[in-house]
Image 1 (cartoon, rainbow, N blue to C red):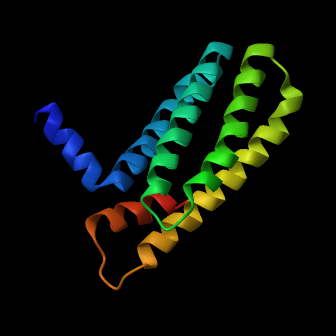
Image 2: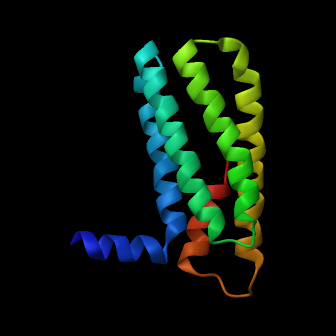
Length: 131
């Protein structure tokens, strides 16, 4: 499959991209948690997940500026925490990430409930909102 076809399909099913990224995180995490470098790499992966999730919120009835407003401070705290090795920032960055993911999940649920017809992308969104 050509790269352009893949891009076209990802635009049609953005929830599938989010679900795949989340599943990849589940698979990769056990291999990265043992070392400091692995934890930093997983932090970078977490930032990528935040960015993908912001893109997904843009496709929902949720407000993009709210998701960006929550995600940017969470990303900044993660970067500061990784660079300066300040574990005291962890509760704050975790709280911001939790707020962001609750908002994203609510936006995805609103997206799924917006009409009476279930699309393929809405089925992927259901998987992406599951714990």
